[in-house]
Image (tube, rainbow, N blue to C red; front, side, top):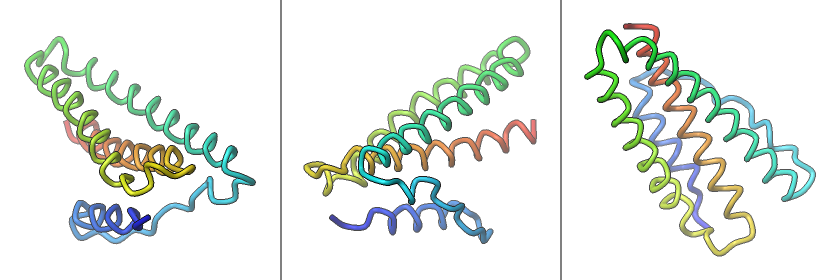
Length: 128
């Protein structure tokens, strides 16, 4: 399996716009076994998805009545982003697709992209 983390790092670096920040520690790194790791990765993704839903609700409340076209555009971009993240993570984890840890890698990728999406949307919330 190729190291998809390299591609992730390069992609994040390109998106960082010159800012330098240390990666947060991997909360799942100390998992006792593959089942525990899978559970941890699923929990990470669930947490990120919950925060994403809350962020989108906040933006919907902001735009739906006062700027309905802007909300429609954001909703459409979110649908497109969701399709992109699924396809991107399937691409990044392709070489491990037949391995026993495939789902772990896929969930980690989806959680990472969701965290990046949250940062993008957070910037919109902070700068209306």
